[in-house]
Image 1: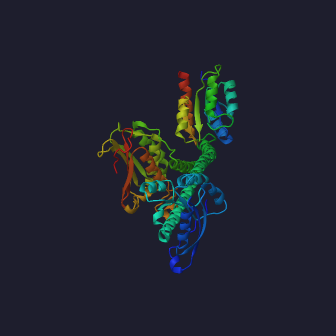
Image 2 (image 1 turned 30 degrees about the vertical axis):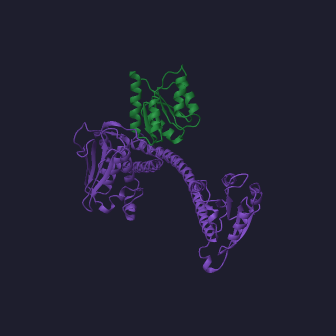
Image 3 (image 1 turned 90 degrees about the horizontal axis):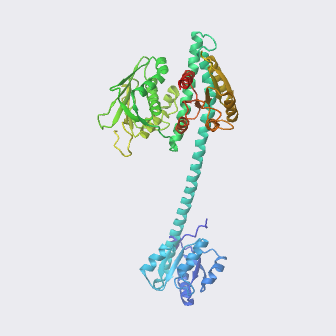
Length: 407
Length: 128
């Protein structure tokens, strides 16, 4: 990065301290150069160290020995134009602002000059200490800002690149993590099942209960691993659906069966009702089972012992083209202020809650994301102490982006 | 007469391998195992099992390559197979089914579901 050019201090006049400025100038007219030197010397507030030449060919050699804060190029340099000289320096990387001096004012020339990257344009007829001071001040400031901007955007680019590669690394780490954790879990769960299934002899009730608990714990751990993996795949847009139009009733029944052990443990009765057995939707059945497992699991966890959880599916009345699925409990309910936030990633209703009820805070986030991937929407109706009803809508046919989705 | 069916398990994790052998033998099947893709392929050619249970991520050739290389070998007829994997990628399921897998089972698997799929695969084969 080029060194920061000296800044014109606007209060220099008042403080009576002078700022030092290294100025470089090229003009084929020695008289014009002398005039420039004269005016520069008369600018209040700073002292100028002027390096000047009348020969464009001399410029590279002269510049190798100094680092100017600012430069003035005459437009007509004899052998070439100020534009051409600037273009050549730009290829080598100019690290200071350049002001173009023209014999007379010309708006078109001025506009083109600025477009080419010059800091400013000054007709020679208006040159004086004041106009020079203003042009130098503006040029230094805009040069500084432009460089700061370039630096910021370069840093930003680096950061984005870094984050992308970090993200890919994390993604692949999650993948290996999931594989590495699932492999021993598979063996653990299956050996427990082998004993539990009586393949190694009969069991008493106590042994059976212990092993059932152990197996359920394995299942819980698998669900956590899958949630983490899914959430990381959502981040990278790698979670895709394998959707097709299919009946909803079997999907609901599968979810109820999945959560039956938890329901039995909490003595919660789960009922499932579908208005029409032919009711179908455009869904990835595995993903919708996952959504339902989460919602039903939550409903059971947050319900008192012996409570009732009901699942219901019907064709949505408004708007048409969607099915409406609801999971209702008469548990502790959710404060309306929390209704939006519960779907956020890593949200837990309270610290105490996280400790008591467990969970990674990914469940409802995944529900929302998975339903949205289908082109549907999800929401909750609840009051504290009044139970909760989670409602989601799924498209009957392959969803078209931007289609109106019920809120 | 009900002949005892032979099942080849190709799985690199020794514990899962052991569990599969236990579960399958308990259900009356004859089981042989391989711990990598190459040994799996050789065993399949030599033993001509009635069914293969294949892991996907394996050293020395993944589960899919075993199926593909068996197909290229005209001396060995079509051997039905079930894919058993820890991966959760839907693309993998798609590939497995396209390649003709009878079933795609995610790890951790449920023993009852596995046996059910094994039975279904073998009887579908016998009927064909």
